[in-house]
Length: 161
Image (cartoon, rainbow, N blue to C red):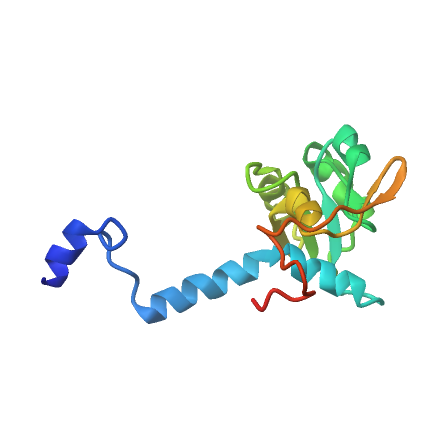
C-alpha cells in the first residue's frame, strides 16, 4: 500500500505529520506556554522560592471551594486593574482555572501577557491538581484526595514523563 493509499484509509495519517524540525519547534513552543500540574506541585513542594507565582483566575466562590496552596487569587475580570499592584513583573506567573474544559486560565494568561508579565498556563487546572492527589486549601482548611489512577501513578511519586 502506498503512502497516499494508507493516508486515505487512515484518519490519523489523512493529514501527514509535520516535518521533524517543525514538530520540534511546535512542541518546544508548547513547553514555553504551558506547565504541567505535577511539575508545578514538585517545584512548590521543593521548598524555597520556586521562581514563579501561581495565580488562580476563578471567582471568589470557586476559590473558596478549593485552590492551590500558596496561590494568589485574582479573577480574570480584575487582572487589568489589579495585576500590577499584586504581582511583580520580574516573576513569571502560572495561571490556572477549573480544568481542561475551561479556558479561563488562557484568558488570564493573555490578559497578563498584554500587561507585560511572563506567563504560563497550568494544564489541567484545579481539577487535575485535585485528581493527581495534591493537597488543596478551602475556606475550611487543607484537604487532599487520593490520586485518580487515570491521571497519576498509584504507587509512585513520579509518572516518568
